Length: 325
Ligand SMILES: C[S@@+](CC[C@H](N)C(=O)[O-])C[C@H]1O[C@@H](n2cnc3c(N)ncnc32)[C@H](O)[C@@H]1O
View 1: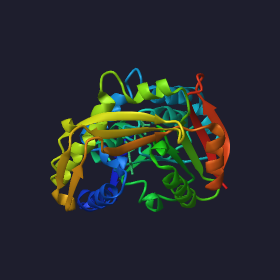
View 2: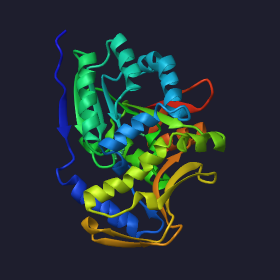
View 3: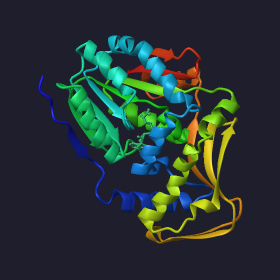
View 4: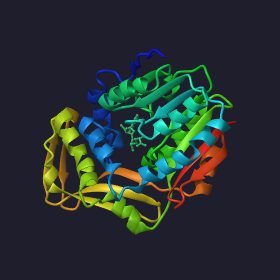
């Protein structure tokens, strides 16, 4: 079969880094606590580090989600009638191969639409996917899933896959709003496949985000390098310690950087000067952990019926198939 060349559409405008990052930095660093949206972690270096994280011995989520897809991908495909698969925050789409293989066995899929802010990673994935699946239309979208859900391709019956528990990076109020927009962007009868990391013992969670090789720490610190490069800031990444903590009340990992000395930081690109006392924390990313009943309730509130919930043998992770009412 002849290979169909991948198509890559860019929805982020060329001034995205200049305008959207400036707005996020002004909003996040004028508020208290100081907070930055995690999407800015994923420049080329951040995406490379995330890929390394997925292979760390302590980082069980990727292995658990892969085990679920190995076991259940054929059943998931048989349970839905999707002919277009859209993947949000697709990254390398490595685990998604299991789903794409199952769709290929069922001769069901016409089109795959990976969506990611990280352009380099997405372009490389699009090329290798179209080589692996000749005949599948790969229509990659460089875009932001908090801004561009309304501009995803229509037609066909779509399944949106949102894997890797990336949904856990939203704060609770943002998550409800995001799921609502996601529901509104699908037609009745279309599909959502959601990967969620489940609540478990705190020591395993902390170990997963504070790995012995320090890769997660480097990933989180990369945020400061992005701000230095894009906005001419003068953060000294070594002036901060990495402080991952489990927040048992909110049931989330909270990944922060803590100032270890008083720091005056200039961020000329955002017109901001910061005076950080010792102990001041920058909130870089959260990773909320879920319970099965909570997932079902949140999906129900966003207009979805849960059709199937699959977990790995250790009960670490869940993949939920839901249908838009
Ligand atoms: C936690 S990683 C998960 C990657 C992959 N789906 C997996 O399961 O291993 C999050 C991915 O979402 C992308 N991402 C983060 N925020 C985004 C946003 N607002 N819009 C689009 N992609 C985003 C990142 O570039 C990264 O590839």
